[in-house]
Length: 102
Image 1 (cartoon, helix red, strand yellow):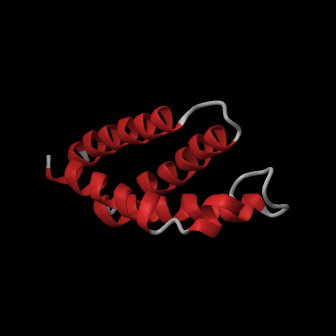
Image 2 (cartoon, helix red, strand yellow):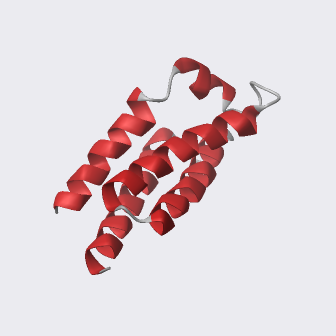
């Protein structure tokens, strides 16, 4: 339960507090030619949060990829904000289970 709580805290920090307005706006394909740089930087920050909590490079890389894809879908209006956050939450459950089992 401790790891799950810390993963949720890291998510709140990386997905909200550390995502400034420029990053939020420029990670959208319609808003910036170099959108993929911004989206990748944001996903790396979130993946770094998972790595710091779990000390698992594997989970950090998984989160970077998953976060990139989920946020891309959200930026493309394929999913909404609630679905975006639900997916991030579900991935934290998976990471916590994996981290406790390793």
